[in-house]
Picture 1 (cartoon, rainbow over the protein chains, first blue to last red):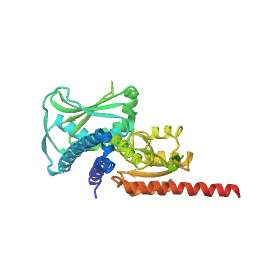
Picture 2 (picture 1 turned 60 degrees about the vertical axis):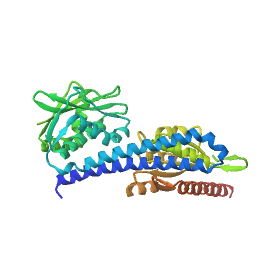
Picture 3 (picture 1 turned 120 degrees about the vertical axis):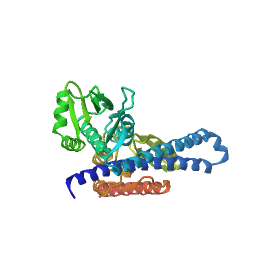
Picture 4 (picture 1 turned 45 degrees about the vertical axis):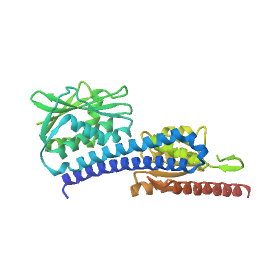
Length: 220
Length: 142
């Protein structure tokens, strides 16, 4: 297996493991909520009134978790189809929302907030390799998570930059390192090399804004 | 430590998981089954809670924000080896299971788990704790 295929499979493996973990959590919550309702039904009819509110809460929890599971399954399915076409038209803001929903847990585990932004509020469409774009976004996120402390925020914002379309990766937070330390650490991390390689394959350019904690993925 | 309610031993358990709805609901179900249950939503809070309340059995998730479950397991087994730890995780790799056993976990369960299976594991863990305490007591008296 060549190194590129290995990297792609490793990326899919991490995404799949992360999402199946989320599905298991959803199923566990549904199971416990349904179980609690069953427990309540099994107790004396006299005690049921006391638990009516908890019973209704459990019912709502099940409905909410089913919705969470459905959304995740739909997004996971869409992600699984990214290798189907080597080029496809994507709307960037929607793609950022999609990516952030799929990867939010990686950030949550580090107490870091991940958000998709849409500053300009306009539709930005690009034709690109969807799988490679997701890989580049994933490496960008992974690199940021490796150097940022807890309580920071990462925002992925589609922007029109000069003649090009770009994704701005903006990090912030009270405990965040200085821009100099941030970029030094980023470039020293092994993930940064993967990011540069994947960006090159995507024919995209990485541009760092050394005044603050922002860098751009310029899509050509 | 285990307390008594109406002359019956109540097993103290601590449920640790960052999925708040899951762990809160599970705690209610455990209370309904006669356990004295409390919850912690991350590893840090779980460790802090040990300063005021020592459970007989801890039910612990592995992947959590901040201090992860494996580190909690390691610290608990160093500081309070008498606490029996059951891993309950949705992230079940073979390497994780192996590491958990090595660090002294009593059981390793996968989410979602049936409540009866969990109750059985907690009761066995409690028995194990009592046997260890008795064995220690006998060797101290010899």
